[in-house]
Amino acid sequence: MNCLDCLSDNIERTAVATCTTCGAAVCADHADMADQPLTHQTLGGMVTVREPVTPTARVIRCGRCAAAHTAAQHPKAS
Image (cartoon, rainbow, N blue to C red; front, side):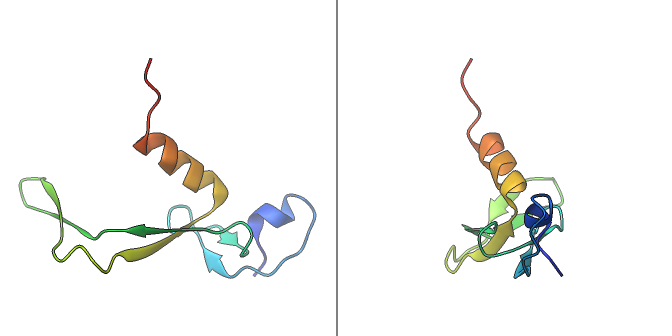
């Protein structure tokens, strides 16, 4: 499988992972790896962080999904 971002630049590079958000194949250069604490959703809809907080889960995103996630986490003040 080849990296989707590289293919858009007419480059064939082997993918090393898939984006956990959109499923796109990404190479090591385009993969954004982050740590994410595991969460638990109660029947009432409340989301809590599971204890113990460490170790965290590994999340790999493509560049586009990583940028969207960052923007959603840190919206600009108007």
